[in-house]
Amino acid sequence: MLQYILKKIIYSILIVWGVVTLVFILFNLIPGDPARMVMGQRTDEASLAAVRRDLGLDKPIFFQYLKYINDLLPVSIHNPKNPKSYIYLDENVYKTNVTLKVSKSRSIVLKPPYLRRSYQSGNAVSAIIGKTLPNTFILAITAMIFATIVGIGFGIFAALAKDSWADKALLAFSAFGMSIPSFFAAILFGWLFAFVLGDITGLNLTGNLWEIDDFGEGIKLQIKNLILPAFTLGIRPLAIVTQLSRSSMLETLSQDYIRTAKAKGLTFTKVIWSHALKNSLNPVVSAVSGWFASLMAGVIFIEYIFGWKGLGYIMVNALNSYDVPLVLGSVITISIVFVVVNFFVDIVYSLLDPRIRVS
Image 1 (cartoon, rainbow, N blue to C red):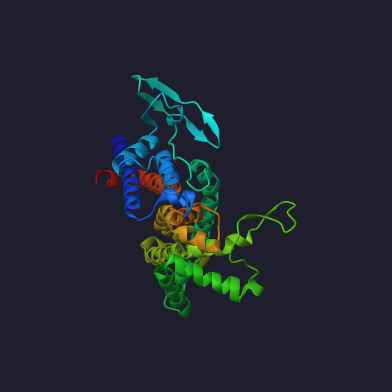
Image 2 (cartoon, rainbow, N blue to C red; image 1 turned 90 degrees about the vertical axis):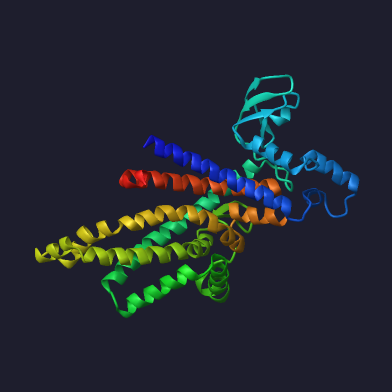
């Protein structure tokens, strides 16, 4: 088991490293000048050269890549003559790290991963992500809870009403939910429920969970702003859970012990709730645990279209402004969340089924 966990940890680290490398290379291939985005289009060349030198953009790409990886690593090498190179700066507060001087020009530093600063705002990328990531988690968790509860209910109902018009309607809905792209679903549902039917639903096309009231006297909780993005984000996992619940319930109802329970005279409700439902939820639970990580990746378009100030929203804005540190920090965060969730899911699978460790 320990060997299996170590292999998973190594694979996870390699995946995150591969994502960082790929995004870093892509940003250096895409035409654009971060210095000009910072200073504006009418800046003279001398000022642009100074900004490039300050940001380290005047160095070769390979050197920039090594420097960025060095900043990310918890154990890195820095120049002790330049304190800012080995002091983690967060919200203008310096935090001293453990350093080990190995020569006059080199020190080994133990520190948190340094994601640098945003080109546009000048704020620490870690601070920006820390403020927006909770909103993304709230949206993803709400969407997953909605998809799980409603999907299981739909699946059980479809299985019990097999081959009826309701069963066929739910199957058609599931096929629609699995095939529709997230960005199109966001545009469609936003237009329908917030624009066309806005007077009836009372939903807003854009908004956040917490908003300042019209008189600026305080912050109010706006649950209604969570409904549309959570519903849109949960459509695809809802369709998957519905299909899995239906298939699993039909398979469970065909088992011998279900027929035995019926033969003993148990009521239909007792058979379903006490025997069939519990055993039919195993594949559904497995799918739900794996889908949460996928929602973190699909949340980007949903947040931007609905104006939900989460990690995906700031990531799209950073792409538009060529804010490389913020984009890289956001991608790294999403990758780590994806890898960590899948890591624990794999560990739980291996504990439930030892054959996974062997294979």
